[in-house]
Amino acid sequence: MNEEQRSLLLQCSSHFAPPKGVKLSYGTAGFRADATLLRSTVYRVGILAALRSLKTQSVIGLMITASHNKVSDNGVKIADPNGGMLSQQWEPFADALANASDPSELLQLIDDFVRKEGISFDNGRPAEILLGRDTRPSGKLLVDAARQGISSIIGAISHDMGVLTTPQLHWMVRARNMGIKSTEHDYFQQLSHSYKCLVELIPNGKDVSKSNDKVVVDGANGVGGDKLEVLKHLCGGLIIEVRNSSKGEGALNEGVGADFVQKEKVVPSGFSPSEIGLRCASLDGDADRLVYFLMQPDSKMIDLVDGDKMLSLFALFIKEQLNVLKDNENETPCPYHPSLGIVQTAYANGASTSYLKNLGLDIFITPTGVKYLHEKASEYDIGIYFEANGHGTILFSDRILSWLEARNSDLSSSSTESQKAVLRLLAVSKLINQAVGDALSGLLLVEAILLHTGWSIQKWNELYRDLPSRQLKVKVVDRTAVVTANAETVVVQPAGIQEAIDSETAKYRHGRCFIRPSGTEDVIRVYAEAASQEEADSLANAVAKIVDQFLGSGSSQ
Ligand SMILES: CC(=O)N[C@H]1[C@@H](OP(=O)(O)O)O[C@H](CO)[C@@H](O)[C@@H]1O
Ligand SMILES: [Mg+2]
Image (cartoon, rainbow, N blue to C red; front, side):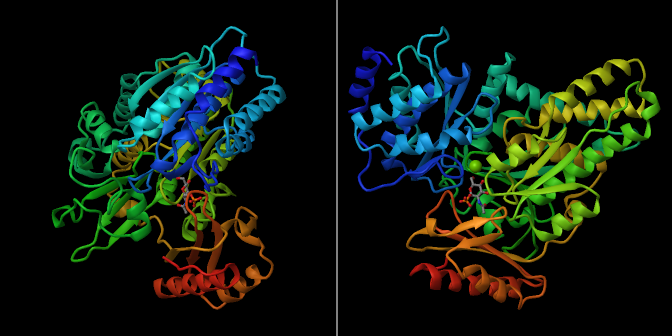
């Protein structure tokens, strides 16, 4: 770094003093905290984004969002050149930057890191960053802080893309770096076009117009509902009714949204008994999560159709297309057997994992956080990953995409079943976001597959019956005292706690229980499954007490 760059960094960062007594961590999905604490963090992440862009010689994304958290919170995360999460190797640097106590410590950290990573400041291409934010009122000020961080690196350019869903920003970063069309309009065009392709490929004999019922979508009072209002007009006959867009009175994520619906299993605000029997869905505050649900008559409760069920629906559809290709191998000059992998976390309902195993699928469990699931899924030709809370997508390797494109040209004069299967797989790869889980593209894929199969949401929900489960949060003195192993299913510290959990779990039929420190909230999460809801509740409560005994005073929520 030259003198000019050093003094610019020192001077700019003196305007962004970090909050006193707060330790920040990049966590499961970027930095998150009360929005009033985040100015200096976001400024510093702006610097990091510019350095990441110089290092990778690519466009980088910076998103201001706290997803499903309350409206007074906010957060910041980075999208890497491929549209995925920030490389985990850079997370310790992000933590160190955010926690540096003054400008000179900050400068020293940057200096050391730049040297270690061999980042060059004058090799031609300037740093370039796309900025996005959700609908939180604090977003504008924080985008401004990010811009100032970016301009603390000489020559760096930022583009403010305005209010976006998180997956839109990730999609744009990926598209920009691939040199393909990357505007919001292009995003809507690609999704709607590939949705319509899938509908056109529905086998003859299925009367699409007859199943033309509607889906009612809860937008969490956030950005997702607003974007869906635009997208729905491009999707032909599909009828989407949006509730809880950001234009209404309700507060973001309050009594609404995918996180609320999945965790509480109750009807979100804005829905009335007239929706009983209809297909309903919920997005989270930044629209990277999606769950479906059915309202139960005469009750506030819902039947939840969660991320695991979406994964199962997608896996069945993809497997069906691959089977068509396998059965008609003689039609393709160079047969090849792509690998199909399923990736879940310990939060996946045990019934879903059994169901997928019975389908003969290859299943892998990773720690919580899409950065882990995404990485694993990308090892397969087609990798499908989902968290139970509804964040997930389907990844296609370059190898299978080239193979499908080549088969499509070979078969283009015929209209065989194989060609239709090839076209469907290609359409799915364009519809479903290849960068990150995306509620809008997920919704369109679910809708297309339900039309294709002719299934109602009830039929889909009956693929298997969820084991009753309960999640609790326990506040403890220091959640980092809990260290886990085996994809977070076993606690290795503090000593003795796992044995206590095991002996409690053994008392329950189909009992399964684990604890882990949250990466987004200051709590320990408890997850329990058992044969009945009463037993799952009782196991979760008993283990919450154990957590309390081992880790100091707190209260379960
Ligand atoms: C149990 C649960 O839902 N955990 C969520 C939550 O992470 P925690 O580390 O559990 O706080 O937020 C993450 C980011 O949105 C999401 O990836 C993850 O699945
Ligand atoms: Mg989210």
